[in-house]
Length: 234
Ligand code: APR
Image 1 (cartoon, rainbow, N blue to C red):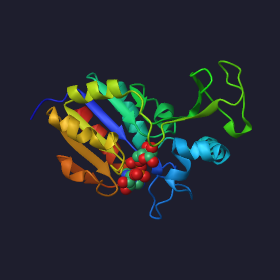
Image 2: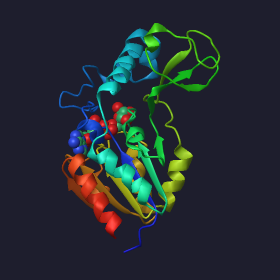
Image 3: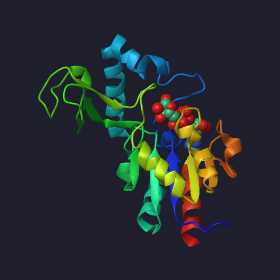
Image 4: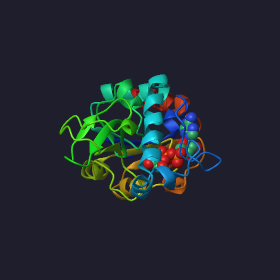
């Protein structure tokens, strides 16, 4: 088997579930009581900006009451101690990987604690409520800020960096994602195409489960620390 130097890790909502952050595709198909199309598309924002701003304001406010769990901490430890290349790609818009201490990290679907101004095009760190229609911290204009979230139909962030890392990695690991949303759902096949070993850790088999060399089913808070400790011993 190829020696492991370069690692790409993809995480989804399942890694934050044990911290108390709701996953997107619950058993009722709703995300915190809303259909995804009603809160996570540019069309929804154009139709009802107040509903969408309030929805993300609530998610942002809830971040204050949650904390990183053992899985986030284990990945931060791996980032600190792994001397090869490592890229943690999260689909999550919470900041639990950041708070756990991961540094080689990209948020491909944006961040709750960031706002994007349509007037000046700049992104800024943001706390508080966008529904109050605050001025942009960069250009001082009112009425332009929206959540810095990649909605359905929009291009995810950092794709060049992610594609380059996938082409170079020896191991691709997917944690806590249903594999329902592209392009992230396709990363396993890209990495596999370039010869990487592929591993998934999830509560139940993801939609792309058959594409992984190995699947471990269980809670991220238990599986991820055990996997990290094993990897650091090799
Ligand atoms: N440990 C591991 N996996 C878990 C846990 C847990 N404790 N709890 C839930 N899961 C798994 C579920 O079984 C499910 O397969 O996490 C997965 C979460 O899937 P989704 O809710 O679909 O979340 P995700 O895959 O991150 O969604 C992708 O969809 O709505 C968009 O942009 C949004 O980034 C999001 C994207």
